[in-house]
Image (tube, rainbow, N blue to C red; front, side, top):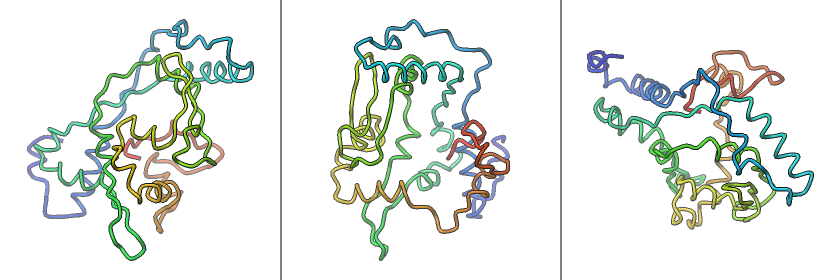
Amino acid sequence: MTLAQERDWDQDTESQAWTYAHRMLDIMARRTQRTNPPEDVTDHRFLQFPQTLSDATRARYITNLSLLLTKEIDIAPSFDWELATRTGLAALIQEFLQYTHSDASGVELFVCQGWARLFRIQEPVYREFLLEFYATVSYDPRKAIDDRTAFTFRLGGVSRECSVIELATRVGIYTADETRSVHFPTFLVDCLTDRPEDYNENTFWAEITGGIYTPSTARGGMIRSTTY
């Protein structure tokens, strides 16, 4: 879309505004596709899982790593907030990314800024760390969100544990003050379990993939929209 076309866009039509904001999110956060396989990193010391691990654990890590090495890791470019500001969409997109958690009567309890922070992250990405983390991470959904053994993984050659809350703060999605809110646990639980009343999995799948939803063959790699 050219700047001239953007200026001609009818900003008075709210439905068009939301559609355009959604499109901008999708375009500016679209993942880049690698055309060549990445440099081999299998000899990196972080990926040489120590013999001190149990045989079963080490075997699981190696199996996971072997699978990951057959995949391409796509790195999304950072969101262009300057472009969003120049086109007059920054405030609209911020509203789109913000979620307000309310009680049954509609009283505001907690305002989530996590998505806005996620789209502002601009950090270097290291393939070795990604492979190490995803090859070793495990999560026990039966444990409380503040249980420090809920997540287990290796990073930087060290075995680590943390809670759901700790992971969310360490990656910069939530602040420590936000996680101390009495409403934060309820907010997280609702985020993990609630679906919109009008949710339809077939319609949703068509929106993000352009295809027909077949549970037995559905794969994350089919997703074309990066705003979900």
